[in-house]
Length: 287
Length: 323
Image (tube, rainbow over all chains, first blue to last red; front, top):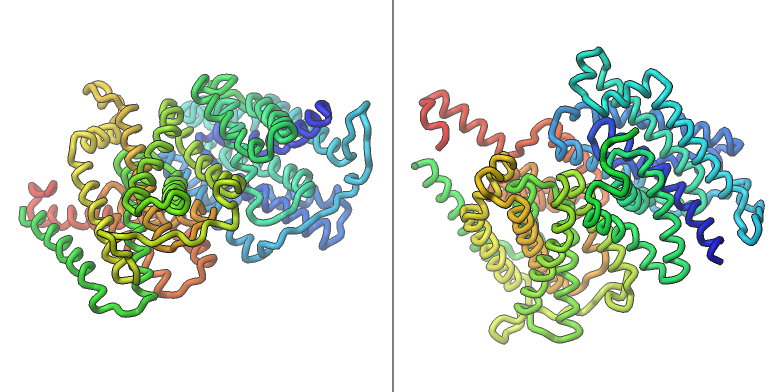
């Protein structure tokens, strides 16, 4: 049972990681906490639902289409909500993204109604047993995809021009202006990247549960805890913290109670703030 | 000086009008909206204290409101305690929880404070939904007894209007005294320049913590009023819907002012009710209003009026600008 709980926790952890990494990346580069991040996840889930269940596209194509749609949406959110407020106070950007979150969530409520939708993904009924641990093919795919996404992200920020520019912006916006890096353009790129990770989460993990307009709130609640635990702006930190939270939650749910499972993220976040206010791995921005 | 005298004249006449309104207003529906507006004024003050005076964005007011409502309702239902004791306990409950989350989250930065306060609101709703043994979960707590004042039960909308009006006026009086007192001046210094405040010997962490705890107290009191007035509560008292309304009231009213925020609470609670906008559409429209407001007029209504006044006085005689 113990290993089964750990396996389930790692799968849940990859959901948190996909969301939290985008969140902490945007914070690390732009010092903006994007409260609309959970809504991007929710909209990705609906995009997949429409592409896969309504248009009957093959699953891989539906995931690809979801990513494209979400990257476009990330672009729009960046241009309308984040870039105009880059020079304003932190509170202003928070209020702007909060307003965007409200607009997107209630807009979705109008368009899709609050009825929960189910998506049956193809590999979910393929059973894979690894020793005594049993997982479905789809869940295995989720973990593998998350790992590939993180490796790709690391390569992107270290090897490409845009990635290097993002790291430069996270270190000093003034210096970027002096050497000719367009901070606004990098801001948009960062948001698009975060939205793409949300799209992966929404297209691959959301189908494991019901899909409805409020799903973003719960996920972003856990992801905030992960971002603080990993150290705000610390991408590898968020990744490790996400898997830790996933496993701890799964164990708490299995051995204590479901209520304890939901309160765990918040309690761990408070604990980390009390003991190591800069997060488990330090707040020195590392992307 | 004349300016501040006319300022007080307007406020006193507004209070007089508010006190006389139930003589004219006979519709129970309108009275209900007016009572809800009074409760919103207390809540808006609670947010204004933290956001407008301390410059900290707290997303926890719905949490303190809900904690106050549940504390009050449970004490009344399980222990049959009278209204005043429930309300005091609700305020203390809000204060204790505010202190408990303020201690870890105010240590680090304004950034983590925002996240922790939002998470706390979501957690509070989660606990109210899942801890069915205490809160009966989504079924809610029906049959909360009405308040009794000197042995007489408060029944009917007019009586409730005056009861909550007295609590609202007391909160307003407390608030105006507080922001002029030592703590109020200290908190304004912290907002303007934290390093300067520290250099002047202000323990900025403690000042912020006290401010946040007092705002928790006001939120708890508002929740208690709501629970006893509506007589039924469920986990939706923690809804983010309240937070959105509050942000609109405080920011558009002019955070950091007392009467601007009161006006904001009255206007932005009345307008959508009177226009009969569906609550879901209202949430959506208010989202757009909030986005436009923070983009275009971050100083709010009071800021706009203030800027006009400055411009006018600059036109006539530049030396009275500070009046």
